Image 1 (spheres, rainbow, N blue to C red):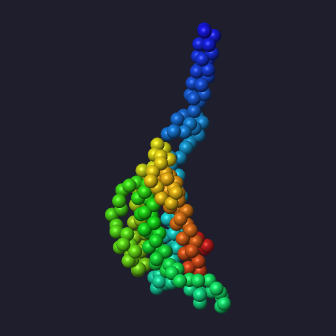
Image 2 (image 1 turned 135 degrees about the vertical axis):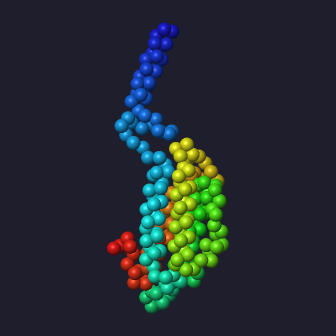
Image 3 (image 1 turned 120 degrees about the horizontal axis):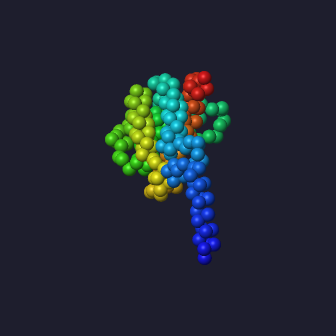
Length: 197
């Protein structure tokens, strides 16, 4: 019995010494001397990159081209592609502005102070640039609420993403899908996308 107690004590001391060599960060153990980003800091970097790239494209499109949408005449004669219902450039900006509010509302549960129908009726470059900027402010504030303790707690979520961290990451991925389309809209209008300069 004494041998078992001694063995348990030795194992306990070894484990304590190993843990002493590590610092605790949230729910994860990080080796001593190493640093760990918070979920909010890591996700805000992704969001900031998306914000910078998208805002650059939106500002680069001339105001008189915000109603542009590809159509059959944009492409080679004889193309069989269908373009009915394709979003205009302005509608892409509306969609992404609304998307920021929609996705990040799921992260924070704080209702945005803007009406989505109002965003959907905006058409001018000036009002859309301003609305988009506001949606990114809201998105960053939502990301700032993500902690090591709540990042992967299951929530209602959206589109199969059911944690705050995955909803935030998915919002950025969704935005970059549309960013790629909008880059092509610029090129179709003879504008070099800022990211290609």
